Length: 104
Image (cartoon, rainbow, N blue to C red; front, side, top):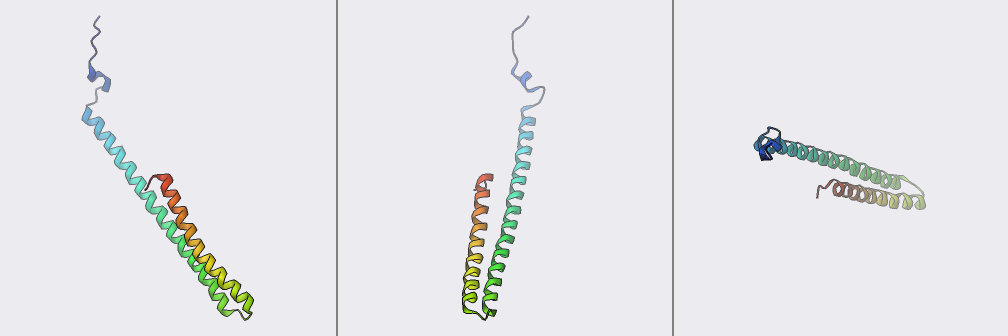
């Protein structure tokens, strides 16, 4: 009985170039999926930013139409806080999700 071990038998009759092609194809597919997920998340984040900005502007608009000075100031500062805070929150959340995915 021969104890010779031929290295090519480990590849189950696949050529090394075929294995490398399969690995490259799988890598390109994963990269495309990752890029798609990143842009989808950025689009959703942009919509969130638009929503928070719109809500802040709506509160400031309410402040302009309020006849009571106390309610007007409260609505104005709430609009500033909601508009700026919501956008900042959305962007920081997007950055955190990108870090978890490995985007940057």
